[in-house]
Each structure stands twice: as structure tokens, then as C-alpha cells.
Image (cartoon, rainbow, N blue to C red):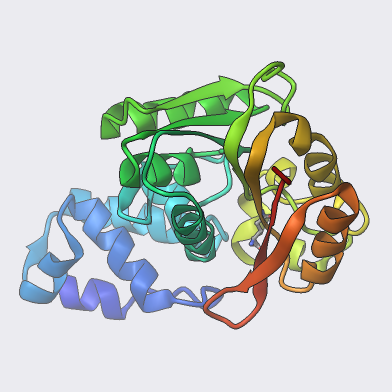
Length: 276
Ligand code: GLN
């Protein structure tokens, strides 16, 4: 007989940065109950079927697989999103991009674009907060577009749509009031890529050339032909890339170029306004 409390205390996840949390998330998923159930019923005996499922999840986690991929979903902003190995797992850091985007434009009708949408996290958070906006999310990976569309349909956000497109390739004539992106920005030689959860994430969503700026350079180059006069470009980037990104924005002709800090105090996003 195995009880909840001992299943949790006996979980061995030596390589995880958050072993207790991981064990709780995996056991509550194996049980099909919310995490609070574990705290309310620590003495509850679980069935052998649940114990086996949990053991299987723990084994996958020990091999390094991210909890979000094992569970198949991840919270972002106020949304619960389906995730899959075709896409980056949405990060709490990226909520700063959503907050900043919401503060840039008034809550009036506007066309907004999310480049490299992945799960659709940013596009759907914006669509959910601003029902008057029409949000287009693009991704060049068709499995990501299908996943984002499933998330959209489940959340019933009819003001968002998803299109397969490599950056702007499928958006020939369209102009937007706001373009946002969390593009790949990790330098190819970054040792961080060989550690932890990122090993399981698609490198196409993470890596961008020798200095990590290949995709950001392309987006900054091409964005002006898709921005309305006075429109904004808002980019997430690495903690030490803000000076380089501001420089690229300014050289391309953007005005009001600035960066914003994340909760860790790093300049994590930069933005520029296309002149009127
Ligand atoms: N912030 C992520 C990480 O360092 C990378 C996200 C990205 O490349 N867009 O794991």
C-alpha cells in the first residue's frame, strides 16, 4: 500500500532544480486531481495503476524531459496551454512581453502580429486581454501552427488566427499596429543549450547563429514594411543582448527605442516605434 505523502517524499529527482514541485505536479497528473488534493489527503492510498503511471512520469523526468512535456500542458499568463515537443515551453519571463504590449496600445481595435508563435502563448494572452484586437500568430513549423490553433479553439478566442509563415513570408500586403516576437536568440555555442529542459526543446526555437541575433536582425530588417505609421516592434532577447538590439532598431530607423527589465533585473525586451 502506498500513500500520497510517501510517494512524494520518496521521489528521487537529483538533477531537477525543483524536485518537490515536479513530484507534486507529476503525482497530481497521475491521479487526475489538482495539486491541492495532495495536501488535503496526504494519507490517501493510491491504486497500483496510479502508482505505476507516476513511476513512469518520474522516470521520464529523471532522464531530463521537462515536466511540461510530460504533462502536455503549461500555464502562461491566465491561460492553460497544450504544449508539445514541436514548440518552446512558454516561460514566465515572456509575460513581460505581454504586459508591455498591453501598455503600448489603447484598448481600441488594432491588428497585432506575433512572429514565431509556437504554442500561441503570446498571441492568445493578447487576444484574451484585448477582445477588440485582431491577433495573427505565425510560425514556420506546421505542427506549431496546428497546436496554437488547438489552443485557440479550446479557449474560444475568435479574435486570434494562426498562419504558417516563415517570419513575414506569408503576410505580403499586411500592416500591423504592433508586432511582437519571442524569437530564437541563443548563440549556437552557448553551454546553456546542453543543460536542463532546453535539451528537449526544438533548437529551431532557441538557437540563432553565432551571436544569437540572426533572427532578430532579420525581423528588424523586415518589420517596417509590415508596420503602420507609429506602429511598434517589441522583441524578447537574451539578458545581455539589449544594447545590440537597440542599436539594430535605431540603425533601421526606429524611434523611441528602449528596453525593459524582467523580474531578475535583466533588460529582457526591447521596443521601437516606426515613425509616423
Ligand atoms: N529564454 C529562453 C532560455 O534561455 C530562450 C527563449 C528563446 O530563445 N526565445 O531558455
